[in-house]
Image (tube, rainbow, N blue to C red):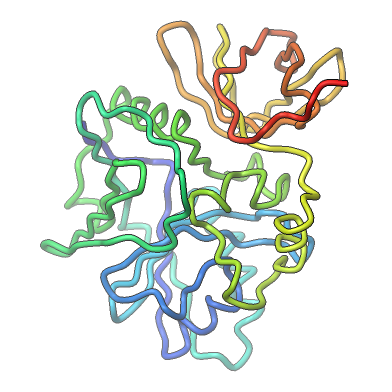
Length: 286
């Protein structure tokens, strides 16, 4: 199974200070990301809210950032504001794209421990990144990548949802801290790397247990969309992050309140949402 993934856009970061600058802006250890390696990372507000999560690829002479296409312009604009005298240049690459490969019948593979970096191999200018959940991302010139296949894209999205790997888009930016999005589990946050925007909030949430929401897989008969409210008893209980079709309707990754983990959930229109998997431990019932 292979397909182009229109969800993603690519940003090239060049200049002598590219790694050092991004190391001070993103949640993972970019300074020690070796050529031929990739990692997950988040870009956060000072209050720890995730503006975008991304895959960072070190090609040796530059770094590529793969993130939601509808966030590229805003993220590049914001990063450029903080460059000052650093030698780091940000360049969106409209002729580049991301494609996915997934072996047939690959089972969902939720992370059991963080993978802070993983291998990326190059062939004819296209990099293949082996992801921890057994899927592969290909990054390179769009003309060198597979064409878009809607069914294959949906299968890929379903695999990532069931494995607990969310992607923030414009509809969900700044709505969650990293732990609500499983980033501490999949390897998107390096807790010993030093300061970056939002680091204090994220560290406090990790070590003092102050996060009260987490990631869940929900299914329903209706097709959901990123940003749709999850509700219980008429009150807000969370938000849909990503969604895909399945044989019964849809399956989604959502951030929900710990306190709603045992409750009956619906979307904003009152359509029932069934809890299929939680990526956190529910609060004990009183």
